[in-house]
Image (cartoon, rainbow, N blue to C red; front, side, top):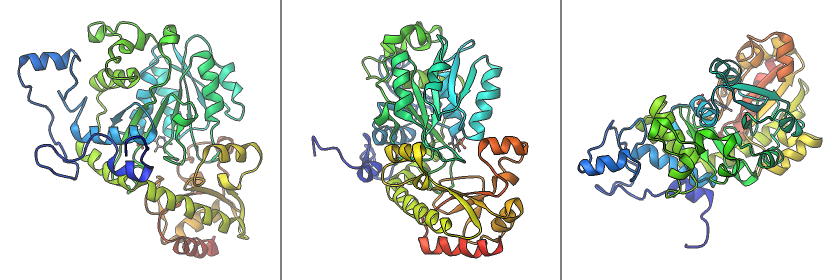
Length: 431
Ligand SMILES: *Cc1c(COP(=O)(O)O)cnc(C)c1O
């Protein structure tokens, strides 16, 4: 077992240090429903607070149940360390705030989850961090928008609704040249893509989606790839390379050295979780660990089913176009084939010839599919963005984001594909 790497299926069940509870032998991960931890003595407490020894102090910062999830996700991603947080939104916020302060900027892809768009365009602006939005069709747009105050690049692997795969390697390479780390939100494609394999510095997730997988729990995670050379570009990253007045002048790139290449994760935990406190609860971590155990199996089924659904829709008379990475052409398809392994993801978009009214009729006729604003559940989900998630946008802005009146988005579940297609067929008959 020593020099061979276990596969995803094995790591999802066993990854990380946890084997069994050292006190009871419990094999299932215990839910450590505690806020705080008894110190052995005053010297022990002193060492923990000084970060001379790592250990649990308070659940806002670390918790043994949460730690099992963090270690398992770090191992699955091929990263150095992970920090779990209360939601995907907290993960994207912390991922930027860990590097940027007032007067700084990030360069971000325009193809973003709506919540992330609002966070970047409005809330970051409110605290003096500028988000520069660029079209990822040309990776060089990232270089052109970069200046000496640029602290990160940001993108989603497989963004809705266009499902155009982001050019991770191309933009990561520009960043490595200029000293800017690429943060990738890989929520829509866990295991199908590992952003660290393509040069990303940080990967974040909404664990709410595929990782939890059962629509029970909100959570997020930041994963530090451990490879970005912060010190080589020290002037760009004062938050990591200059003394931190909030922690007796600690320099995070130095403080992390005995622990591994985890300066980014360490700072996120001991300053952002300490100060802002979007901690994941132990109960939620337990739920997410249960989901994670079957992630590789579910992803395989999601990907296979989505391929079947896309091919079915492609031939349907009421469907004018199908948006699916495996059916794209040209550069978009090249990127899909370069980055997506073992399938093209579980999301499928399509346009109904009958426009918005057909979209409504289709959604209202679904019996198996749930009509929800979510993705990544075991169950199949559908939504009509023009009347829901994108309804606040003007028709022109809807079109700019890729949402036409007849556009429907499916998150294809893990049910039997024949049953999924049968539900689509009867609903399309009503559309
Ligand atoms: C859902 C989602 C988020 C936000 O995650 P929450 O867990 O809902 O806070 C961020 N990015 C993407 C791509 C998402 O799908």
